[in-house]
Length: 339
Image 1 (cartoon, rainbow, N blue to C red):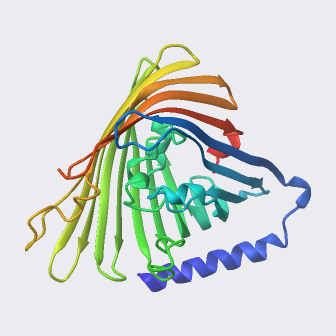
Image 2 (cartoon, one colour):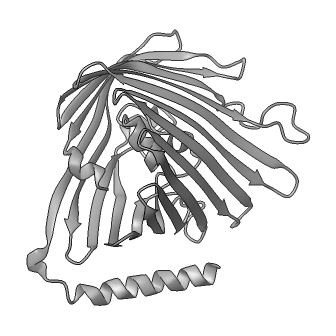
């Protein structure tokens, strides 16, 4: 299976290189990519750090539309690859978020390079508030949001799409590095106009057998109310023990007007108690989060949100934290959504 996928990658790249010689450059078009996530936050709990302004992310790039179904994209991500510590917030590194080529014809779409993983894209689009908080898969490290590899999707009909891919495995992580292939499979199902269903799974066996999967259900009522439910899990199957990480999430948003909406989200991150353990193996990071507030869309390039965010650890010896946030997003949204 691995050899076949590697051969397919080589053939696809070779075809793209040879095809580039025949491209009519007069038919090439493109759109710039520019988007910023910034915020001001004030701690509410005793253990929250002081108020601060923060530029969380900046994306800069260009999206090319070549002739005969080919596309290309280059996007720089300027931010902190490791957001787990306060020190990381003062470091700003620029790295390639996306550098890839794509081909689309009829019902098939193929992408190669440093590209977005597909497991969380439906959820991210439905949540539609990445500038405030990441999706479950991205926030709690079930899988990286972007990786080096190849993926494809085939649209059987408007109600059923299949996704598959072979990725390197956290290409920015030098420890795991190159050669740790992750095989992804997903299904996007739309049984009705108001209902969205996402099923996804991944597998890798470079070090241990790691299997992950999840399901997402999104429902839209009256074109104003959106409700999303999600469950994700990850099994790290080692020689002696199996380590399970799993998360639940629920979110809802209601459009009061075309510009003003209110929203709420609840996350719970949990882990199992392996053999010879007395507590959950991931207890230090297990917990629950609430995000709730209002969003105002100033125009098609600018929106902002006043919201409450907290984190309640499951470990009894760890403190709760809570904040009030003013999040702002500014950019060229249409180009951003195409990537």
